[in-house]
Length: 264
Image 1 (tube, one colour):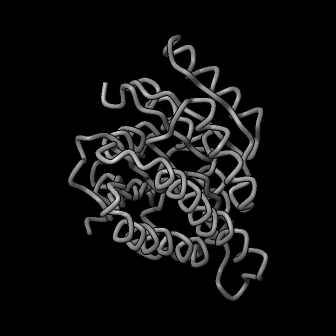
Image 2: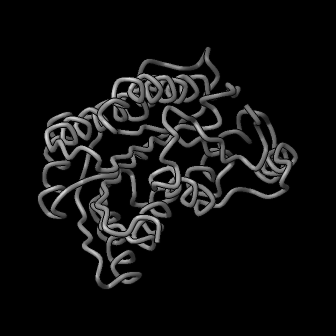
């Protein structure tokens, strides 16, 4: 197992991609602190994870990634419960969909506060914890969830794209700052992932483009060379690889998991 003996912290793990990553981390040997804005969802996933590995240490907590005090407290609580932290996955994210001319500040702030500021606050708390612990030679790894839209802008998603471009730039800068301390920082860029978030987006896009939801889905499929929608587990397996020592010579990267939808 790739993460045996390691202790992790994950945000936005109550549903979708975050849930799949949490389960894969535990399956691959990690003890894990599972957080989400919705505590009930975090606890449900923690129960699923515990069932996968009865010997795993699993903890669930409520977390609002926009709140620096809340973030710092949850990282400390997780580390205290698990005994240490070496791994972090900053996955919490949101989306909405509008034309730029119809965007208001609330739309912009909602996406930027959770997708970009949330990544900053979580990474800051995690790196501060890693640096306090010292532990030279210990593997420490962070993976941030960006998006295909963080590399190639998407119509109707200007504010979301801006937030995910920010995640990639921040990831690269943090990787440069922390490499000498033995901390690797990478990002993963999912594409058209079959989640409840995507289902909402399909309906929004259909309404905005005057199409049916099925026509939107067919557009997605035509854009994917591998010919199928992405599953959350497709992302989870790449995240675990990036966390593990199999990726020990990788930092500052934004890895596409898009079925070939983008190749740069």
